[in-house]
Amino acid sequence: MSTTTTTTAAAATFKAFNEPPDASQEIHQCSSRRHPASPDAQQQEQVKTVFEFEEQDPQHAFEGHQHHNSERKNLFKLFTAAFSFFVAGVNDGSLGALIPHVIRDYKITTAVVSAVYAANFVGWLAAALSCTPLRVWIGKRSSDATSSRGWVMLLGCGLQVLGNGVRCGARGRNGNGIGFAGFVVSFGLTSWGQGLLDTEANGYVASLKTGGGEGGEQKEKLNRWLGGIHAAYMAGCLVAPFAASGIAEVGKTKWYLFYFVPLGLGIVNLVMVAVAFWEDIAARIGSGGADAATQEDKKSASALLKETLTTPSVWLLSLFFFFYLGTAVTAGGWVVEYLVDVRNGQLPQMGYVPAGFSGGCLLGRLFLPEITHRWGERRMIFIYCILALGFQLLFWLVPNIIAASVAISFLGFFIGPFFATGISVGSKIFPAHISPTAISFVFVFAQTGGSLFPVITGILGSRVGVSALQPMLVGLIAATAISWLFVPRAQHKQE
Image (cartoon, rainbow, N blue to C red; front, side, top):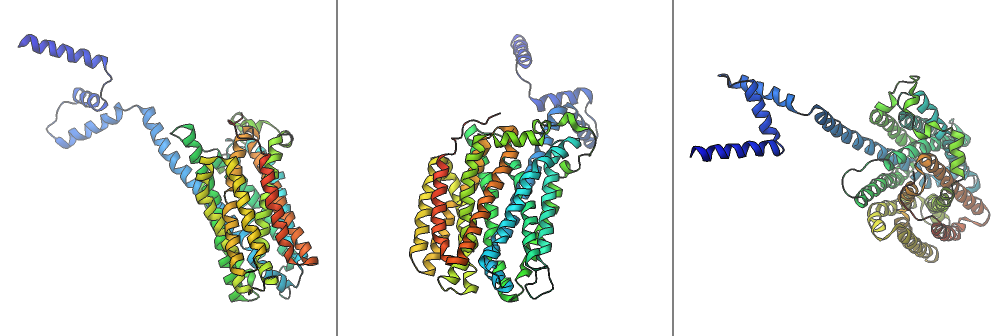
């Protein structure tokens, strides 16, 4: 019996030295050796607890705590990015419902009111020209180069708040407010801020590490996040016509009171950005953070812009966005005036039609990304263009307001996933070090289409009538489909 016991003990000892120890058992043994049993059970438990913490790997515990905090911070940053897009949607989605009121209150033509779209373009151009220099300047002067993102987003929020504050003083033609000229300028300020904010928010989400899973799962999760923040934009566009039409109808000539809504949301957004990106924003300025500079910060703004403009994929994707955003903004901006002027609809009721278009876009951004990812982005976007063209022809050829409202909603549904899909493709085909600059350029080129084609529609509307909207939309959807075929296929991310 003694020999058997000795052999068993020896085998157990050998096993203990050759197998990974159980952490809890090792902690218990260490605690027992250093602190013999005490009559006071509470004191013994406290001693055990102390040595349990001492026996843990300090680096592992610290990294686990950091990972948990990082996940929470990233989640709040992601929510903040989505809310920023929601605020942008409220700004953009209200214009179509308010344009008829602006035309009648200021007693101007469709050609003159198109100046607000031109101001939008100027604002986005300012964002494209200033975004990279701001990132480079702040990155070089900060102890943490990533602090440039927080500062640029904060500046974008401030410009949006300023622009909506100016709009709140519009007060119509016969009032004592800023007048139509000031109203137009406010769109430039808001678009400038929106351009800075959207570029950095997109860049942040596209750069997130999804963690876990295979490459395909990570890609799918990233596509969902991008689709989510752009769905938030369409949620803002969906809410805006209800709020704008309701306030304009109740206030009659006080339609400008609606802009207190995006003003309040903009202030909330400013606070959220400051909290979410506080660590970036609080990085000490002027502390000689050149060692922490990223690859982009080491290059001059002019060199980055030059490299961006000589990259063919940037221009090809920009062309797709040029026609796509031209389609979306023209449809959403002029559909109410078209239904009132051509189809003899009642303004109070027609003011809600853009909500159907935006609601379709929202549902498309929520439900179509999964199908688009599984069946192939290149194939599905082209199919969506064909379906959108079919519903646009239904909108044009069937002279019925209900049919038009349904058709414009389905048009929005099928073009809904275009934006997020385009950004996802861009994040794969653009070289990593020019990606923020390239995305900024794509945005401003897209806004060129989103400003140019509504202006053209307004000028044509003043000459031949707002019915010019229909052939304009057919041509834009066809051009969107053709330009998508020229976008390079997404391969592995370029370094």
